Amino acid sequence: MSPKISKELSKHRLEQAKENIEEAEILFKMQKYKGANNRAYYSIFHSIKAVLALEPIDFKRHKDVLAYFNKNYVHTEIFPKIIGHKIAEANAIREDSDYDDEFVVKPEETERQIKTAKELFNLVEEYINKER
Image 1 (cartoon, rainbow, N blue to C red):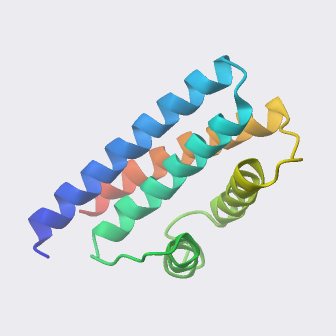
Image 2: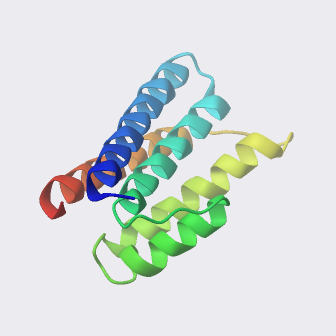
């Protein structure tokens, strides 16, 4: 993949992340917390994939995307270590929200997921603009 295509793909994925944040906020206002958790997580996921597009590297499974990002970007402190913990929490809450019928979503948890999505989006946007 050429650097130009990688940069375009990265920007496209970051735009997806932004749209996911907007969707999460709308769902949160409607008190649809499970859906908001899902959209916040997908914003995080698309932000991470925006970074990976610059290498370019890709994976089919979410756990592989998250593991690679943690190993190569969080553990090396390209991104703050705390964001790795927040991403893991967002992933766990998204899985519970999506797959556990008895999971009770707390509005403050959902608010935290949206905040994490925005934080990562901003970090990734800065990284893409600075590094590439």
